[in-house]
Length: 129
Image 1 (cartoon, rainbow, N blue to C red):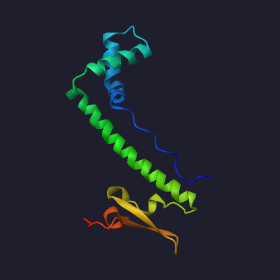
Image 2 (image 1 turned 60 degrees about the horizontal axis):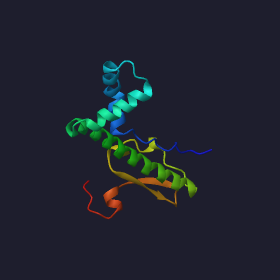
Image 3 (image 1 turned 120 degrees about the horizontal axis):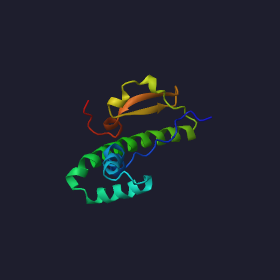
Image 4 (image 1 turned 180 degrees about the vertical axis):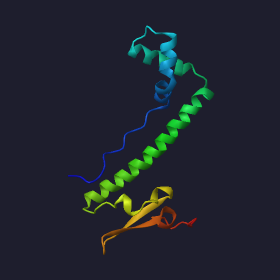
């Protein structure tokens, strides 16, 4: 049995964020006779005709969610790689504040443990800490 979590789910697009939060309500209030597929089609028409500044709020939210998703996928791939080589993944509880910093974990094969190291130090860049 695998100890790693399932692959993170891809976030919804800016259009779906808008449609799920307020788009359906707007469409249903103007056209109560529309069925679910027709509401989606009408939502697409409204989205295409919407001004760029109105879309920007939803696009920004979607880009933030996508950045978070990419980070989660990177961590997931790292866990998969470790598992492929028979290395136990670090327990998240051992490093409780690691999500607040840009931190990597280096595996020490001698004592089979993980040690935190900031990404800049790992890449031999000047560390900001």
